[in-house]
Length: 155
Image 1 (cartoon, rainbow, N blue to C red):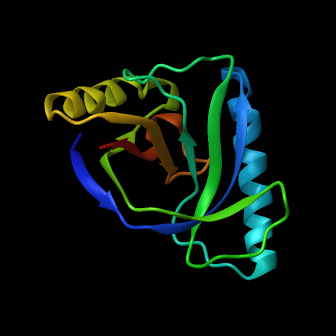
Image 2 (cartoon, rainbow, N blue to C red):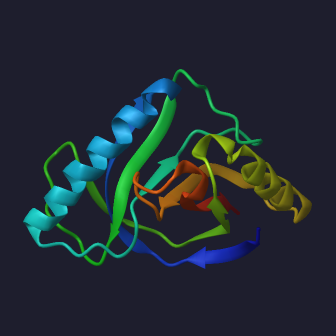
């Protein structure tokens, strides 16, 4: 698996934020993607790439409080759209990250995250507590063939 340093350009985001227990994550992601996708279509927005989930309160080693995981579920957009109060639409600034394409079961991706955190440390950079997962496959693809782009932000 190849891990590379990237600079992500600024981009418009439409999303919702949640604080959930780890077991609630699957119940939040799918319905939120559906809701946001419908909203974007209704408002005439243009989706730029695949949907994502970002995790916001990760510790230095990628640890999270499994009883209060701060997460954002959303889509990158080509432009700003008008959204209801419970949804956010904002310009995400450019950021630096390590990026990797992971193929396999979601519950087995811890190893690649650990490799990425280790690379950040070895390069004298600092993990900033946020990671993105961009989902390239839908639920009809077998779990062992699911494709996810991981981005671990650093400064």
